[in-house]
Length: 100
Image (cartoon, rainbow, N blue to C red; front, side):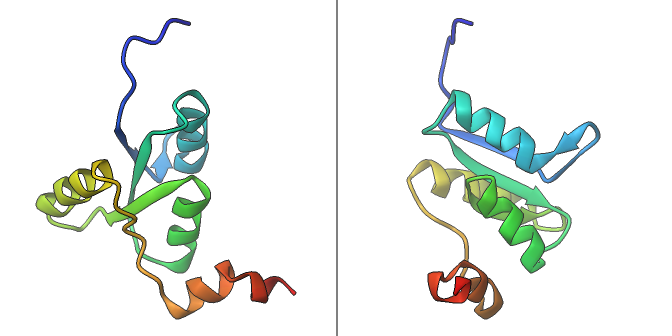
């Protein structure tokens, strides 16, 4: 397959009718490994954050957020920002010390 253009940022919905956002983002990143993924999720639960991170996302925006927040996240992601805020529970899950 000939690729015409490589995206800088893609916005992926966490809940898709025919699969998961994690699957979609993973597939996109296999083709475009440098793409920055912004996830849209119905909530900000630890599970949502973890799913976004597993998908290689650099940001998560909730569906209830103001549209400008999504625009800001896309712009910042395109600029190289990591927009995943550390939460105590999420940090514990992601910490190498927690795996032992």
